[in-house]
Image (cartoon, rainbow, N blue to C red):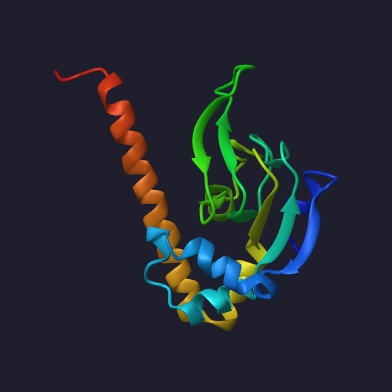
Length: 175
């Protein structure tokens, strides 16, 4: 496996490789703009490097502040991304539907998780570990590079979105 995903909850059920559920995986991601440049064959090849897990409702699949070595894609079910902002009350940052990708920041930079993810109904996740990302890069460099460019596009999109949200609250410090 090579990822910490199954260690977060005792009731996580390993379901095998995502390639065992390739049609469900392709169906989940095909509507996502970041996957629009991926062919069915490329998506299926990617699924061979991912593990699938079943997770019950109200389970933590990412915990803010934990070390992280994987990203996940919601295949079925629903979940939310929560941010505590150093306070006891958590705020919903984003609601996730099938096809949503999350956890990419820690996969890329090795830093602690920026937010938590909790399921709101029973859900299945496709999980890509850092080790398996490196294996894709070694085995299929074109696919690996395409996937990394997709992650870069996703990250810049989220940065632009966050900047747009906080822009009105920034103080003008012009001299």
